[in-house]
Every structure is written in structure tokens, then in C-alpha cells.
Length: 251
Ligand SMILES: [Mg+2]
Image (cartoon, rainbow, N blue to C red; front, side):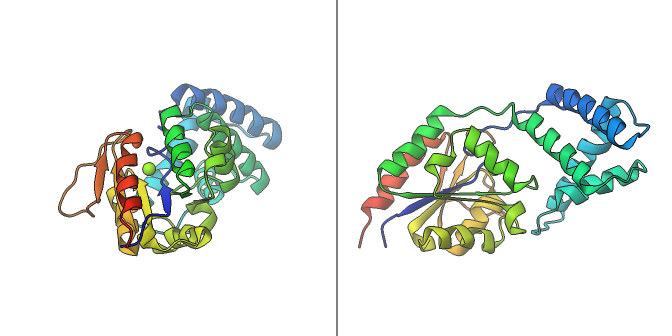
């Protein structure tokens, strides 16, 4: 067995928690409603209805695509265009992009850095390990990179990739391979840490990575039908003993 050289993390519900932002959503849809009224002179539903017809509708389309097991990532601008079309609204793509950006910033502004988890990243780097991030997200890659900057994650990451920039989602091997290639580390010398058995653990194990399930923010039960992690942890700092164990197992 060769010694460990890299740790690759999932983002949502692994490095940080995602909490519902209902108030922020309503507030930003007031703003989006005003923008659409001003820019496109549209007769629009009130903000709460607009949240349902756009934000929730887009979310449903994403959830459906995961339910069908699609590994191709969706284009968020197309999703909004579809939801708008159902309201009989056709607007230029750059205006759709502004809506997407407004919604994204409002939703993600509620995210907070998790200091103990940032300490884990710091410690892994101090051990000389390379760090990667692989996240399934239909959101615009530029905005996702902005978020991890703001949350203080970027300085500890050698390479970060979102499914929306590669076009495929975990557990597709291409997204894991992309990061391992960029890190120049073979799968057997890397750990993947994530909260989802099918997407995170399944994808990583298939390539031959070590895989750790974290239950800090989301709790998945181990069942025979789903891929089995090598370790299960309740909080990210509990990853460190496994890291040391693999680092010491040279030969
Ligand atoms: Mg996750």
C-alpha cells in the first residue's frame, strides 16, 4: 500500500452546512420582480408566487433529474428559461443571468464559514497533503468559486471543480478523475470525504480512492444496496486519525 498524498472533499453538507433561506428568497424575489417589471415591462405575479413559479420550479427540475439518476449537469439559465416560459415570459439570456445571479447571492449570503472544518483543511496542508474539492452544483461556476472564496475555503484548496463547469456530476468518474489529474495523484493515494453514499462514496470507491462518509450536517444510513465507506465520521475533525493511519502505511 502506498502512503496518502491527497484529500478531496465534497462541499455542501461536508465542509459547510446549507440552511434554508426562506426570508432571503422572498426579499430577493421582490427585487427580481422589480427588475423584470422595469426591464421587460411585464405583468408579473407577486413575489411569493414568483418564488414558487421560478425558484421552486427550477429546484424541482433539478431534484427530478437527480431522481432519474442523470449524471449530466443541467444548465441553470435553461432551467430558468423553461420556468419563465411556463409563465409565458420570454426574456433575453443576459436578463435571465441577472436573475440567477441575484437569487444565488441572496441564498448563499446566509452561508457561514465553519471554523473547526477550516482548521482541518489547515492541518491537512500542514501535513504536506494536497487538497481538492468536487461538488455537484447546477449553479454558475463563477458564483460557486466566489462562495468558496468568501467562506475562506479557497486558500486551502489546490483544485476545486463544480459539476456545472465540467458538465457531469458525481458519481461520474470523469469529475473525480479531473481533480486527481490536476493534483497529479493516483486514486489509491487519495481520500474522498462526502455526505452522500451514492454520489460521493460510490464514485470515489469505483475509482479506487479511500472514502469517508461524514454525518456532521446530514445523516445517511449505511444500507446494503448503497456503496460502503471505509470510515464513517460524525464531524470533520474526526477525519484526522484515518489520515494519519494512511500516511503511516507506507510500503
Ligand atoms: Mg454534499
